[in-house]
Image 1 (cartoon, rainbow, N blue to C red):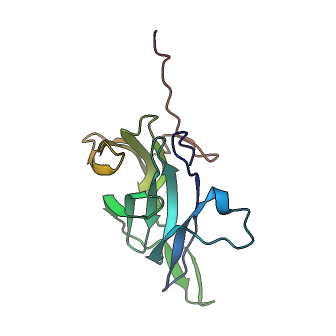
Image 2 (cartoon, helix red, strand yellow):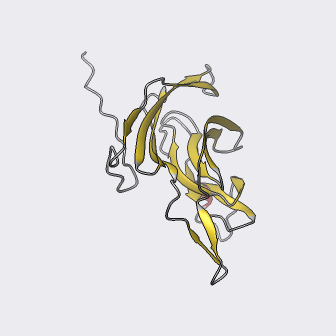
Length: 191
């Protein structure tokens, strides 16, 4: 996280869960405690056969948006980074599980036919918009926008998904490389 007004900074680590088990797939740490000999997460999210496919910190609050691909669906959450009080803002059912059991080796592997769902997320500079890009079914890629509402104290209230999604059947709409694949560009304000 990098919200300049906030006294604390956070580090989030998303991981891949195991086949047929529940595990911590998102851990959030206080950056100030990372130099300690022993470090424990402030909060964590557990998922059954889950994987975190994308995450982004808000720019003006201690909130995080993250997408989780589980066996049959993916969900998009906004949560307070410290308490991980969750607000589910989207859910999409997939045709294929993202992991499968190889019956020959009895090892799990990523299902090549499965779509990951949301793979990139970004908050607008004022945190009033959240955008996502991802692959949903076959080669169908979508770019989606949510309008976000916050109360006066900076607590998340709700989200409204845009009716219009930009879709492309052939290839991704953006190149997803690096840690920030979506950027917002603002024109300078006049004085």
